[in-house]
Image 1 (cartoon, rainbow, N blue to C red):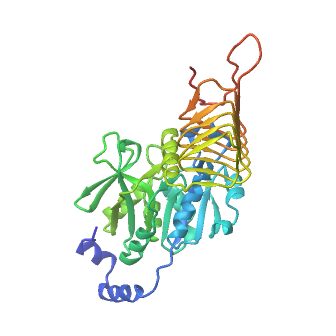
Image 2 (image 1 turned 30 degrees about the horizontal axis):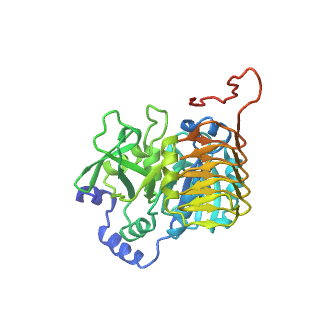
Image 3 (image 1 turned 120 degrees about the vertical axis):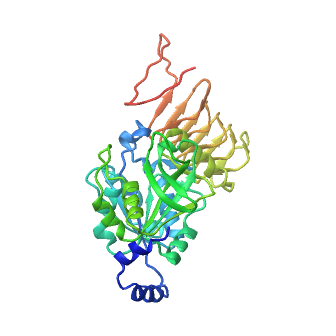
Length: 385
C-alpha cells in the first residue's frame, strides 16, 4: 500500500532529500534481527503444556521452536531475541545461546502474555532502530521466509505481513484487501470479512513501536498486533502483504499439531542408524535414530523412531513420531506423537490421533477386578473403546 501524497508530505517535509537518502541506503544491506515469541501458555494443548512449553512439543522429533529458528537462519538472520515467560528455563535449556543452531540468542522476559504488540514493546530495547522479523514460536511454514525477507529488504515497506487462505478465519487475525492493498485487519472476528488469516510472521521497521504505544488493550485485555498494524494503515504508512502458497500451520491445537507432524514426516529421507532385527519389517520412509531398537515389529512410514527408543512386538503406523527413550511394547499406534521417555505396553486396540506427553505410562493393569484406573491432569481428553 502506498501513502497518500498528503500523508507523505505531513510525515516527510523534505521529500526530495528523503528520496535521495533512500536510494543511497539501498546500496547497503539492511541489517535485520529476529524476534521469536515463546511466552504463550499453550492453553489449547493442556494438560501437556501444564508442564512443558508448547513451543518445545516435538514435530517429527524436533521441537517446533527449532523450525522457526531454522527459518530465520536460512533467511540470513542470526541475531535472534526470544520472548519468554513462565517456561523460560525450559526454553533456555533447549536452545542455550543458540550456537548449536548457528545463531546468537538473547532472552527477553515478558511479564505476562499481554498480546503480540506488548511483546514487541517488551523487545524495544533489544531491537532498537533495527528492522526485524517477528515469528510466532509455534508456527511452521514449509517454504520458509528467505524470499520474503529478501523482498522486505529490497522494497523496505514499513510493514510486510504474511497471509494465507484458511477454512476457519474466525480463529485468526483476518485481513480485508482492496486489490493488493491492505485496508483493514480484525483480530478473531465473529464474522470474518475474508478467509485471509495473518500467518504468524511479520516484518517491521521501528515505526511499529510508535503504533504499539498508540493503541489500547482489546476486549481480551491484550495489545493486539492487528490493531498496531491498523494504526500504520490509517496513518499512511506503507503496509504490504504476501499470500503464501505453501502449507502453513499454527500448531496451537492438537489436530493442527498432528497435521504439521504429518506434513513434515512426508518429506523425510529414510535412514537407519539403529538396529532392526530379522523378524521386523520396515516399509516406506522411516527414520530409525541412533541407539533405537526395533524387535519383532512392523514400522510403516512415514514415521520416525527416536534415539534409544525400543519398539517390541508392536506396530507403528504412518505419520507417527516416537521421541527418544520411549518404549512401545505389544501395542499399536499411528498418526500420533509420543514424547520422550514414555512407555506404552500391552494395549488392546490401536492408539490413533494422539499426543502423549513425556514420562507417561500407559499399561494394562493385571489387578482384579478388571477396571479402568486413571490418573489424568487438568483438561485431559481420553477416548475409550
